[in-house]
Each structure stands twice: as C-alpha cells, then as structure tokens.
Length: 172
Image 1 (cartoon, helix red, strand yellow):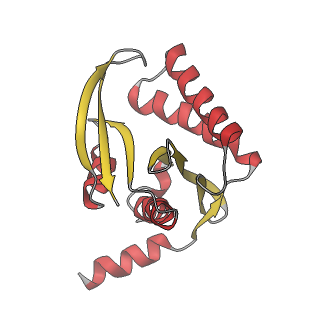
Image 2 (tube, rainbow, N blue to C red):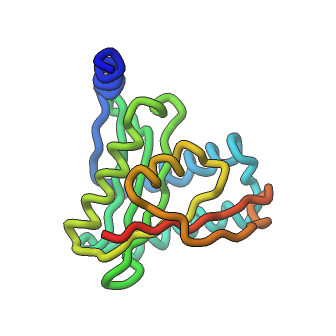
Image 3 (cartoon, rainbow, N blue to C red):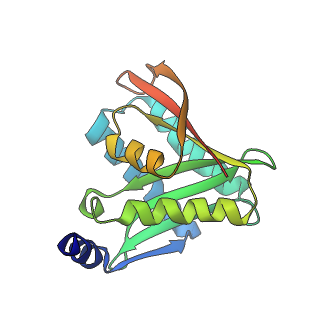
C-alpha cells in the first residue's frame, strides 16, 4: 500500500489543473475527435457536429457564475479536460471529460472529476448528470466511486459504431 501511494504521488507530479482559456477550444475539440475516432470508431458527421457544436455552444453560453471548464496539464502540456454547464438553476451537466492516454492511470482523472464536483457544490447545484457509454470502464468506475448512479440507457447508432449510452446522476 505504501509503495502504491508513493508511485501515485510520483506519477501525479507535474499535473496541474487550470481554468480554460479561449485558446483551448481547438485543443478540446481536436483531441476529443482524434481520441474518440481512434479508440471507439466515432467518425460520423453526426458525431463531429455534435462534439464541435457542443463545445462552441458551451463557450458562447459560458457564464462564469454557473459554468466551468478545466484543462489538465502534465508538465505544462494540455492533457485533459472537464466541463460543467448549467441546465437549470438546480442542475448541472458534466461534459467534455477526457484524458490523453499518457496521463491515464496516474490519478489525473480523479483530480479532474473532483475539481468539477467541488465546483458544483460551491455553486450550490442540487444534482449533476452526465452521459457516457458502457465501454468506458475506467470512467464509469470513477463516476461510481464519486457517488454517481446510472439512471437510464439507450442505444445510439449515430456516431459511427453503435454504443449503449448511459445517463449517470449525482445528488449533491
């Protein structure tokens, strides 16, 4: 156990989380498109439009009192992202959560999701939800470990490969 903690502390060194800047938009879009294409076969025009439009809509509607986007950096290189957007006064949605393969398994994902949940609590949201899909085992493990519960599923055939989408919710 002591050795594992020492490894995680060393692995997590060089990791910082900062608020997004306007210049991060291209990184968030291009890296997600690339990662989801290579890892999950998401290549359809519907997926590309969904992701690109979603990020631009987030930036255009951004309200610093209710929304946030954090960029995770490893040794000052952008390596991940997470965002919270308001859906109404009581409900937030977690979006655009991804990590570069090189930082996975080092505790970076936990740091990023904890930062987003802390933001939701600070802003007094009553609940936060997210959409994911069933094959993202590590992400699903993080969500469950933070108290999220799966509340619904449906099959999506629009993104290049059929996926079982899941809605997860956390009461705050």
